[in-house]
Image 1: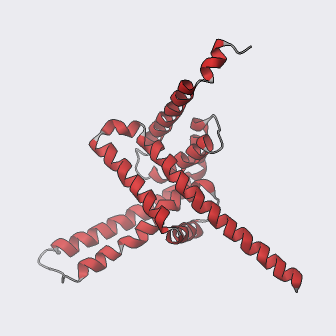
Image 2 (image 1 turned 60 degrees about the horizontal axis):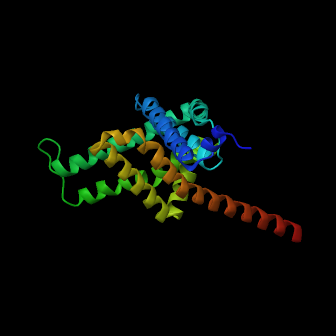
Image 3 (image 1 turned 180 degrees about the vertical axis):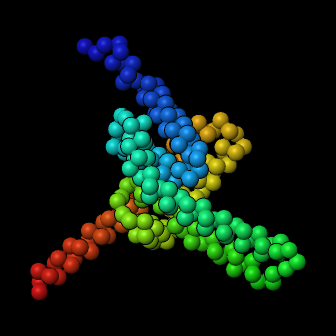
Length: 219
């Protein structure tokens, strides 16, 4: 016979509360570990890893998963985050100069579109970089290359990831208490798109390898 405690823990209300608690816990961990700014990349990868483990694999230790992934990906996360920060700062400065000029120097009107085009590599490489870091082992060069190629080949999902990200940032800016749940919440939404992209890429790679093996056998 099921006890009252078991009935409570199996109830829908309890499960919803458990989900909300895990989202809160992971969001707070992400905020704390992102405070130095340069560690934001490793924290984002750790958040994605923990969210994936919690909601796709139904693992019950999200905090432990977050810490483990953060430690594992800290060095590479720092490098990737610095690359994005430096590139974004350079592009931002370039756009500002294009708009306002530099001292007495005023740049021609055609330079602004050129400066804006430099945003494209950032817009295409950033969305899947840290999810990729969380899920796969690769050197930095191939990580950036593979995540960018996946973004280009799945532009619809890439735009959706940017939409989720911008929505979460806007919510946290205009209603700061959202910061207690938005990071993990948006990571969950991003995961649903990113994992489909990863699965499609892995399936294509598997099919390519099987095709090559078949050709070698026929020869």
